[in-house]
Image (tube, rainbow, N blue to C red; front, side, top):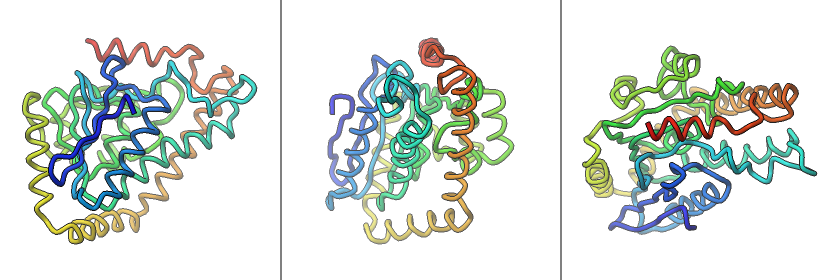
Length: 269
């Protein structure tokens, strides 16, 4: 688990993305190890709160497009059904599982939080953003209508969600706070301290009461149709991949992993 850090701070489990040289881009091994750490925190009775954070300048530049997942390919070709199954497990499936861990979770975000990075923070119950954080989903530029855990509408509201997708622009931490996606915006040099203070404050509560409070809110979202909407949007997401595959032989509209290069350049700026 070289790209995922894990430690206990009292009753708080701290999970850290630790691939700063790649702007914490997510390849298959990072996601698999991240899921293992989520499971570890969920199964440890001593853990009351989970914090997800990242080392380095940026939270995450999203999917690592330079190292496509082996599950995408069969006999050297991208095969739609195998790629769909892989994303169902590693993107939508992992995010849903993290969302339903019966313990409060907090994402601490600094710098870039781009595309696939949203799959990591939106399943968390609370989000604390540094004042330099920004959020974007530019994948419409590559022929796909949004990332796999398509919670944009739930997190931002319909009109801001459409703006994020249609323009591919960055939303600042303050804009995300105003939309209700972020709970708190704090100075960058206080991000870890303030997040841990919040985590320990929550950890003082009774764990069963916390679990039932979380369940009540999540169940309300489910009654409102969130889970069905996420699955439907994921299937629509795959219309984008299928269209690109027919047109270019690659599941994005560019066969060269230019998005990864572009994100890295943007993150460095």
